[in-house]
Image (cartoon, rainbow, N blue to C red; front, side, top):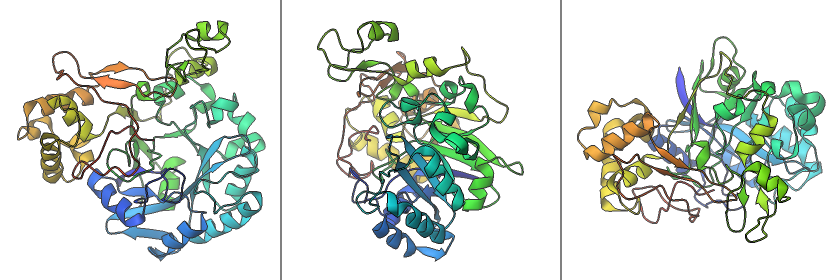
Length: 417
């Protein structure tokens, strides 16, 4: 069976997260999005784990209506590298928390910082049967490749236990498959959402072929056992990421890598720090000039949330306008979910909405868009091609983490967190 899964997000107990990050809200919004399986996030936080137990049908099953949950946690190690763990059951989450408790305060933040290195975290994960891999592996602040040149440098003797690599918002399969050591790993594209609304939850997701919706089913897909696997990654264009190109973190001036190196990574305009971009970091690590995809690697489909596409198509300045929300509701109600509209509906079936919206959805499916890369902490943005342009662009400003869906008020943009 095929499922859509977002395997990395956070609860209301993580720093800078919406108080709406509660399981019932996450379940409801996931259903609107077309996501079958959602990460709990933060499963070793004591108060959050208690809440998770309240929705458990048994030790291994947490579900609300048609939305299933998989227990997960993100951990920051002593070197600032972030790791994602997928945990088999509630009892294993309790065991994991017990083993981790001596290395940091698990109650301070949903994403704890522990006095352990990557190899030690991987060893504890293996002890409880959890799957582990690096989070948003290329971003310049808290990623594996920000501080290490290889998997082995990060995980040491536990390198062979690494089950996957999370690409993050600033990379895709084309970026990662230029690095030889990643050829055997399954790539995951997850939202890392801090808010449950449709512009955040499942802004990136995975389509998995699984025998059943369970930890064991996901494990078989990630490890590609018995013919199961990840059959599609869906997510951002890497250029949308706020660290795609090397740029000054103060004035956002972009620099070629060679010029930045000659300037000792200090901006020649304002003196600010030039932060190395993901694209340049991949070029440093790459063994191949162009992507070399292994036979098991699925396609990567670049998309943005439906409300953003509608906003761009109509030339509106906000996704809260009546025109955007009316079209969004009509499409989601007709096809059952946002994902069904974006990925599955035949273009000819969309003719009941404004033709500009139809043409824009088709343009995104064909990746016929104009990209303006981000850098230095400022997100990139997207334009429709000239023949579809409606005097607008996909904006990139920070919004309140409690922004609601297009059917409510105060939503800003897809690019929060």
